[in-house]
Amino acid sequence: MGTSEDSAAAAALAFKHICDDCRKKLCGYLDGLYNVYRTAVNGEGSLKVSAEDSLHLVEALRYGDHLYSPSCLGYANNGVCLPSMQYAVRTSKRFMGITIGAMLEEIQALYQQHQQPCFLYLSSEVIKIFGSDPSCASYLHNLIEALFKRTVCLLTSIEEFTSRLDVADDCFLLASRCIRYCPQLFIPSSIFPSLVDCAMIGITVQHREASNSILTFLFDIFDLSKSIKREEFISMRDSVIIPRGARITKILIASLTRALPSSRLETVTYALLSLTRAYRVQALEWAKESVSMIPLTVVAEVERSRFLQAMSDAASGADVNALMVPVEELSDVCSHN
Image (tube, rainbow, N blue to C red; front, side):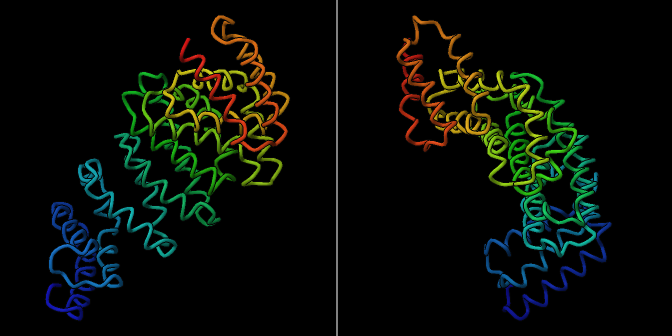
């Protein structure tokens, strides 16, 4: 592969066929295989493999029998194969054909045993590419149910969120991908209510990426009507959110009043205002109830009124940026007092 582009092209093709023929015996050589892949794809060293011919190397690494077998799990757990898995999915896309089903089944099985966040991250790539493909609906439905059902069992308290930050982060990144790319599978799923409950537990986790992933997930739920117009999905969402609305509002307002650092104020505000836009009068009642729990010795009536007026303006469709001042004012007053 280092002689010329012509010889590199032939070598890359031969490499692919060798890996195909010997796939059952490759597990012990994954370090070497991955080094070849990384060197060629990243342009390291003296290899002269073109971008087009490097796809042969990706194919070599994506042969499912060695890449996803339990005997090779240590490589996936350590992240050795994850870049090649992701690259294979991104590059091959819909040409993966029947291999996608086998890959997803293996991801489910491995995640059940080992709960490594890399499998959640890889599944996000799969959802992005195949989420709208009707031929993959059954596979993806099973994947969603299996991954989220296992994850919500792991994240039942704020302490567990803190000890599994990468799992929490990748879980809710995956959930947001599901809302954007396959809401028709995700919203009606049996796991959706449990995942909302899980998000409520973890909103105030003291970790920027995990907290932002959870808040973005909630924002995407509240803003669902912008991405999907089918009324039955909005109704399904409402049946989950409305019974929990008062508590969600309380947690978000607590986050504004410094249960979370000020650096996350904007993300919390967007989530709260999107909730208000979605549920209007109900959301205003939830906000009034929550704000009334803050002692008058901390927040004066004038600050309460300005904040609630901002919520009312949000419910009427006012621009979010114009509402930030009273929200920041409430946050600052609570912080100082």
